[in-house]
Amino acid sequence: MANKFSFTADKDLVIKINASCGKEACNNIAVSIEGRKVREIFPFLEKKIELVFKDGRVRHITGYKHTCVMGSTLSSDVELAPVKGRKGEVKEVTVALDNFLLECPLNRKLSYSDEKMIEIGKTASSLAHGVRNPLNAIKGAVVYLREKYGHEATLLEFSTIINDEINKLDNFISNFLSAAKGEMKPAPVLLDDILKRITAMIRPRAEMQKINITQDLSSLPHIDADYFQIEQALFNVVNNAVEAMPEGGVLEIRTSLKWEKDRDYAVIKISDTGEGIPREKLRRLGEIRGGTGKNDRGFGIFISREIIKSHNGKLLWESISGKGTTFKIYLPFSAKRQA
Image (cartoon, rainbow, N blue to C red; front, side):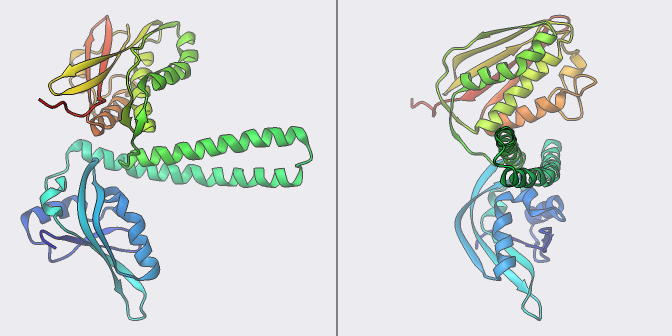
């Protein structure tokens, strides 16, 4: 394999760099990923490596599409080979990827935001595991009650509701975990529908805070996007606007189409009439280190920006002290036009 990069993974799926890693680019990668979990750097290889540990077979994958840290996708031929002990047990798995040194952005030092997204991925995995365990216990209890007291109509009705909600929560956890790992499931999505759903979710709280919501939706066309991720990105921005108006105000949500350079964009404008963001904090908005208030709303904006960037879009904002803040989300909905 040309420009091959290899490492080994132990039974805990922790990465160990091979001693043969001698090139400068390879050394830069080693510093970045040595000791990390496979799922943090190569999330789509995790299950493949587990299979090699299970059956001890060498696996060759041609043209394997995988994600490198922050959603950068590349194609490599991959070889997974077991390293066996004296008794034939698999002690480690060697992973070799071709063209990795040329294409993967890990041959540079990880940025602060990259490091934070990796930390978010680790936290999400722990959270999912911690929530799913009691969730499975509840589901088991519901199954038991339905089997033992299935003749009682009222119990059957409410146990069905509980079971349905458990399934919804389990699905949410799966989507949340996929988003945190940088995995995307693109499909045709209507942004107007997402915004209507978000408005419905946020309206009770807005009414309690005496916030008037105005919407002007322009019947945007479908875009190819991960529904869950885009919904979370937009919800974070809308929620940020609501939090900025604890004493009431106006939340305005508008959509439009815009031709910019060589691409068609769906534009979502979300404005509030809160106190605005001070200039010194506005510069740091979107950084985990620099929130906009005591609830550190900058974290949600950071997540939204990373999701939108992964969809080839952009998130812009402006704020006037004493008058409010406006966010503009640009998402491409068509391929580049031909000249």
